[in-house]
Length: 195
Length: 328
Image (cartoon, rainbow over all chains, first blue to last red; front, top):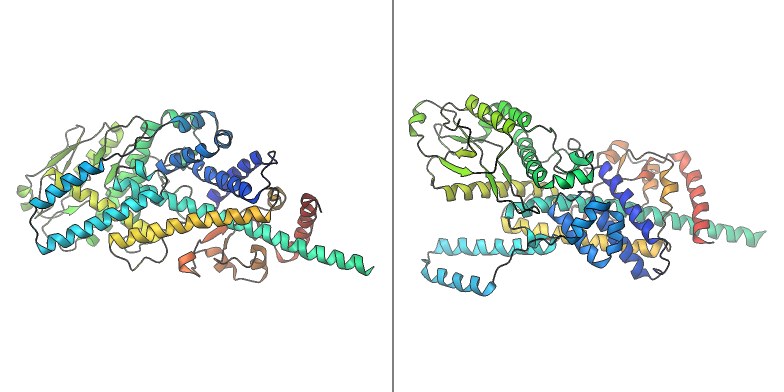
């Protein structure tokens, strides 16, 4: 599935709304401040598209709430903001020492046929990769289920694509605008100097 | 799953979140499954059909969907699914629904196995002794009724017409029948189905077959998308000093309609693409990949609707506004 135009519209509107909140704060004149503002509002806009139904969106909102609580509260409507921000999601905990020890014991007991070894290594690799995926997807540590993880990844990818598409077109528009501005400025200057 | 609640207020959604999410996911799952089931040969999912929200439920009613699946699945899916199994072996029905609720109240896991559908002769009936049951949470009555009636229609010997909270699963021929391995097998199949979806989504991994390789690609793709977002936001921050992009002006003039090709390197601003006479269907199709590694395909850009004649004047007026906003 590819991002649809309605999704992009919605994202854009929400993002605009978020940026409006920043406009009266004039002290974000440094580039990094502005970049942060842009990125945070874009992230919250993307997450709010899902209206709290997916795990990653909730985790993302919580993450941005730690950086800018005010923005998140403003961008989301009342009820959701309160519960989403204050909710602590259960983390998938595992005591690594204990797990490692029990795995060692298990390994000693198992028979070492060649096929099994290969399969075990493959499984290890897959587990490592899924852990890597959990690190990348927001809220991945809270997804105890592999199936859920992949589902969330799917949704997250589509939303990211929407975000990137819209941002890219805005950047292009802004750039084109500034190019044109520069062009006309040059023309104007030339005209003034001439006559 | 998400967009269908667009009408509901957020409060409602939230209060019912615990219940809704379970059902939503069921429906979403069903949609997952009944779509590729019919397009089983083509791996791509037509983006135009699914509108808002990736897991949008095409039909809101659980029973209807199930009815569809059952009705056609027998016809279309059955021939395709008989692979290595002998003619007498049973087939696995498409449309496994699994929901995992990790919602705020932390409800217990819900596994709903799909029913095995028996296709062949009566001699098979006698062989059916194994059944494993899984306990699930209470589903809505209507859905269950439909399921039961459908299963009665389709299979002759299903013994699970009793209205309990259990869904009975039949083991496949020649495979272990204890509940754990069945559960595991179901889980693995679900995962592989999802991975197929991911294959369609992530560019450039049609050839990768293993789970590890696929996961690698997915991780790389997600990371690259995230990096792109960072980069674009930095670019935007440098380009516009005041965070107002004059969007309202630009948008006020047209309707967001035609999706447009967005070149990965984005040198040409969108309006120029339309001007330079790109064939309109190619522009609109949005499925052509120029650069597979970087493709971010369709972009609905409001500026895309500029016509040849109008663009110059529109941009001029916009430029005037930009002047004023930039304080020139």
